[in-house]
Amino acid sequence: MVYNQRAYWNLTLNNSDGTPRDLTGATITSQIIRRQLSNVRDSRYGLTFDISDYTPAPSPISLTIANENLAGGSFTLIIDESAWSVLSTDTQLDINAANPVGFSGNIKIAIPASGTTPAQDLIIFLLFLVRSDGVTN
Image 1 (cartoon, helix red, strand yellow):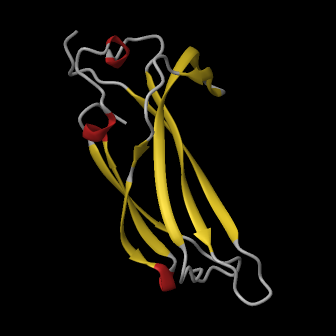
Image 2 (cartoon, rainbow, N blue to C red):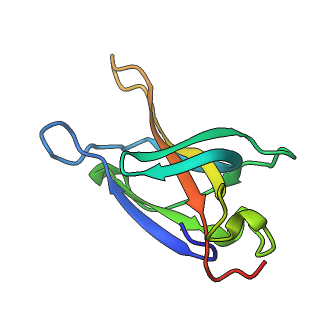
């Protein structure tokens, strides 16, 4: 993610045979929370880092779920960085910062019980690293 950006993720859940999963009756929610990243290293083997609670403890931020087509198993997650309370004066936004701004969270799809099938939750984990080369600190 980049500071001051809005993105739309169109997601469709499929069954193992590739057909859309019917999510009729499901409730879809999403939230993230600011996290402290440290020891961030980017190598040819991937990104490694430590993640911990941010101080002072922030409140979770709800992300918008739109365009729900539950029978067709699809929805849109709107990622609007302006709602994240990231300020242009945040030193972790600097493109050269060793430890960028971090957010972790999830998309939770709560599927109700149906007949003999018990209720279940599907969880998609989220991790955002936010940097910008357009911010002057």
